[in-house]
Length: 134
Image (cartoon, rainbow, N blue to C red; front, top):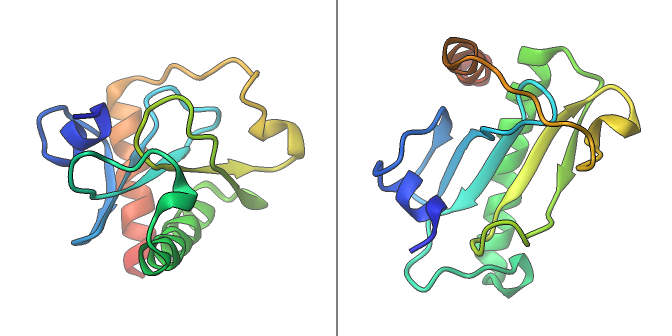
């Protein structure tokens, strides 16, 4: 079982942004930018670890779910765009990074990661979730 499956099951705490019956979105604990969110599908074991191994319907639905999250991130962070990255090497469970950006360099994974206090992380997650409700 991957760390993402444990987060989805509530065994490991996370800063949840949104959830439905098929997907879970939460803040990256080592963000590149404030609002950096991960979107993961709720998968049976063994979890798929390569996005293009997903069933076409799940892949399509993941993109639509991610669009809603991206709109919330953009509204909450006032960024110019929300960049999308699928690397898939860090955790062997399909996941998509949604990163608020104002310039290309904001999405470089070689940048130093932010360390944010728990209270600020909770506020960011709540802010994104609330902007999605509007």
